[in-house]
Image 1 (cartoon, rainbow, N blue to C red):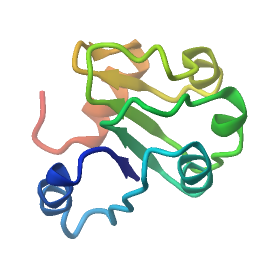
Image 2 (cartoon, rainbow, N blue to C red):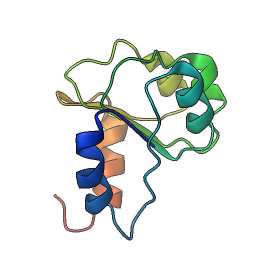
Image 3 (tube, helix red, strand yellow):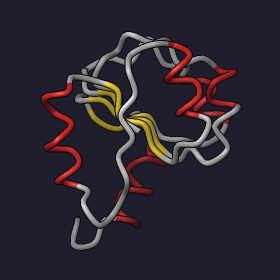
Image 4 (cartoon, rainbow, N blue to C red):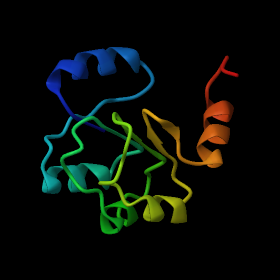
Length: 110
């Protein structure tokens, strides 16, 4: 799931071709909430929608959130931590779990 500028959508889709389907949603609370409930991953390049505990709790399949910024104050990090879901920003991973998860699931890395 992707929320952000349309200019980046084509590049993202090409980058994950044959690995994942990218679903783009507008930066509106109801749209993000509905899509997040079905998502495995969320790339947030808009930072316009607050990601609440309720949204995270309803996202059964969610495994990671990445924010295209150095901060992620709009994301309930405690709710993610409670579910051991990593939160990545441009500053880096926010937990050692994220680093471990990335190493295990990225062929040829590290």
